Image 1 (cartoon, rainbow, N blue to C red):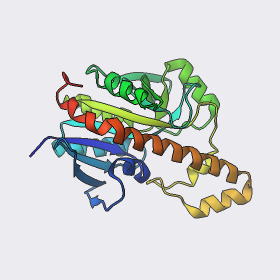
Image 2: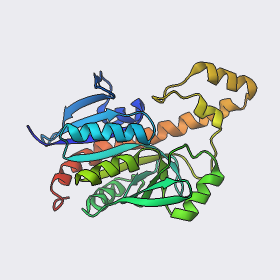
Image 3: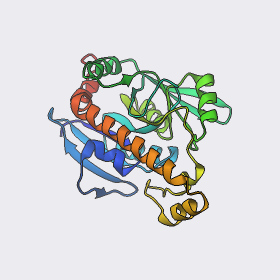
Image 4: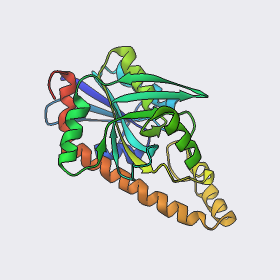
Length: 257
């Protein structure tokens, strides 16, 4: 069997930027889909659900399945004030933030990021390098984002990349992280919206309606977040089909990009 690449995505909408519509197979812990790239390399995409523990579980399952490359994709919060909704980050390093400390988990050395980012920029896609930092709870306020950017210089923040990167490093596997900015650095997200999401990223209608009744202006926050979420997903999908998917097999041979 040809070598396989494994990708972790927290939410269904994020995963579908790669897989498109269609049924998922039921794994022991996480749904997954398998396909084959034009190069003949197999691809396994796993929906982990949000958070480091779920992402770690999904990436370890992929490792046990014998994948030879691990990756993670999805939306993120912007930390660099210059980033806009839909901007892409092809991480060249991954950090993990915990409490008052942070540490580097992974650093890119293959040249993959530089090559792919250059091609995306040539296609008019706003693609950036830099660090993605992973946190254990959602970073919702503009003040928190600014503080983390000042302390670490990270471009974007998520809740899964460090877990997948750690599994890759532990196994000695190539790794990549592709993220699209949804909420920019200067924007705060009402905590009510977070409480309206279930563990798979779906909307819990009852808390949503209660939140709107308490604060009718929440409707405008929802509409803005939906718009930016759609923009971020569109960027991920475009980058995947234009360049990323045909470049991934090069990670099997780090000398070729």
